[in-house]
Image (cartoon, rainbow over all chains, first blue to last red; front, side, top):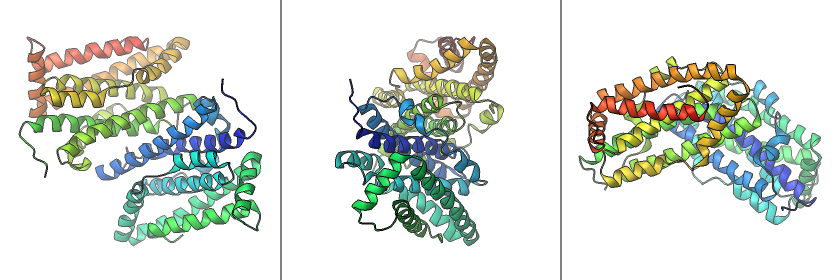
Length: 223
Length: 223
């Protein structure tokens, strides 16, 4: 029998959130294999989705270690992305790609930040699951960079789109921190361990925004 | 430098075909994570797509061993599924699921059959890439079985749909064997190694049909 202590609730909640977000991202990015503009782009989409799938498997293993089946583990988060997804329905393949990059980036950053509020072992398990092999994200961001370098109007449109997606992503993060006490408590722990003197939610938002700007920079897009 | 002999052409063609079909299947099944009826179904779709992704990685490794990048390796097959896909556009999630099961099943069976025409080492590499862990396909076919047991009208509709999908799948296989001399030659080698006294293409078609019937049986659907 697997024993779950009250302390386990925090890592279970954070890993379950990350696993559910990855399930949705897998579907989002995986589906774009079909309507990719060419074979190279399709192959890159598949590579990214596969990596998201591997991350999810590691996160599900955290749930299994606490005796939770995938559906029990991810169940508390069903529906959290519905409003985000309906507000960011993409109308082109490029918009879908950028939505995947931004959404994946913000959600990974959020989980990594909140993991700082966990005991060291639990934090390490979450960070290990969310680690990318160094070149995988570069391969996707480089597709965007090449395309926008070649077509500045596409770059301008995608920069606007990126602002909309990140705005919706940050709203969702904020909502989660406010409505899920366990996640809010992790944010407070993480903020105090980082000597942040401001409100924990505001601290998380500013960290996520800074990471987003760096990501947009790498793609040659104005944040 | 990687040396490629004329004998390598056959394994490269067959593995490249299998890799490209898996790329498309990954997108097809992966996209159904998003519109799955519930979390359990979404999780199953993701598990299947992930397995398809792992198979594709192993097939790409066969290409890499012959010095071929993924795009070079799969490139000769771009477009082969377009007509199949437009003729089998699914209108419900269940149709999409069954299309994935049937399409994946027939394409895997075709590749396994043609592999019998290869030298032993090459055949072993293809078969290893196409092996499922025993319970993965069962998990998907069992979803269909449970649903059709509970709703015989769904079962009747899906049985009809399965006939349409398998018809289109077999037409595509036949077309590939006739228009791709390398694959046609593998079919002849495989048929003669199996003491088939009939035309090789007819032999492949009858083997594929028999496997399909067994698969439909497992799902409780009339083939």
